[in-house]
Amino acid sequence: MKCNKFITVIGNVASGKSTLTRLLTKKMKARQIPADSLFKVNPFFPLALNDRPRWSLASDLWFFYERLKLERKIPRQLKKNYVVVDSGLPMSFVYARSRLISGYLTRNEWELYKSIHDELLPTALFPDLIIYLKAPVQTILKRIKRRRRKFELKHYSAKYLLGLEESLEIVIKKLIKHKVKIIPIDISKIDFIHNQTDLNHLITEVIK
Image (cartoon, rainbow, N blue to C red; front, side, top):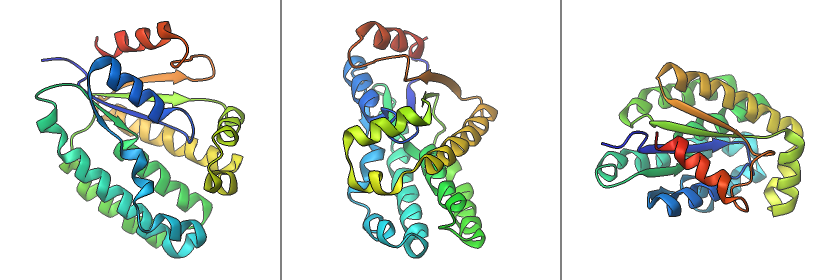
């Protein structure tokens, strides 16, 4: 059986998670789980953008449950090939915790979210491997401006991105305790799109 068959790509906003997921999927002939694109169909997400305190809990619980449903199907898919997940369950925790830091979730709401999260998370597999995309906040801000999503330009400040980074580090520590292999990558120094050598080197690390 292949090692590191269940791969999840995580990182800050605009760090290149979806792009790298697509590249790995194509190069490795893997199954892609585009969990990061769920914002397009989350009925609570546009509501939460307009009224964060009112709708953040509902939106984050929706994201978590929908990602959970996607990842519960992974054991069957692993029988045939690699599976690469864009963001996945680790990012659900990261984004929800950012709402607590920003004051959009009350302490009681966060405790409710966390209790549901901790109760249901063991019903899904932990990834074999996490690819953690990292970059300085100023690099992330430049990428956000370049891709010009209106809700990101409006809501995603340097302070917010630093909060996400803090939550990502907490998630990484939890995953290490579960013996999940972590590959950290500084995206300010590596170019997977235009440098095939960088991508090939990463794939070599993944399939070890």
